[in-house]
Length: 150
Image 1 (tube, rainbow, N blue to C red):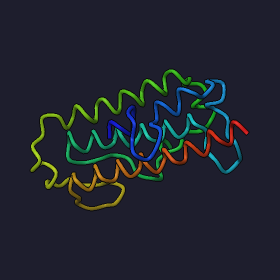
Image 2: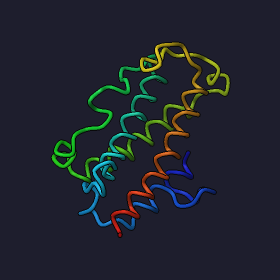
Image 3: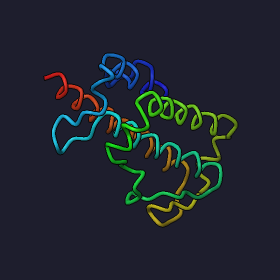
Image 4: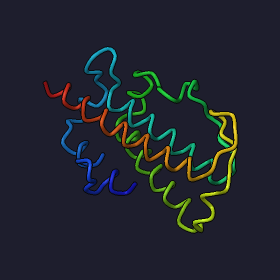
């Protein structure tokens, strides 16, 4: 997970390396009507990381795919500002790693209630999903950046 955020992952550039080369004036631009902005993507990732931390701490989440926070409107994101969105994203990763530091491997086989999928799932499933989600959107981020530069 840490490599995907700020390291040198096998799949290419990390989030930090990709975003370091983006002009901040472009983060709220939707390159096409069907693509999200960089800010929307980062906000979306933050929500699901924060939700994962909540599940780890309490055994239950609170958000679903249909919640408004999943994909905030562009105007709301602009009102928050890029620095706030990026800081929240970085903090969500720090919080996720911190929530796991003192856990034994056996914790991964414990279960929590997933509000979105309406059932009991292991924490291993949750963390695999967060990793898959981050990798999926890292690829999407690359496409958005290419569109913005063309």
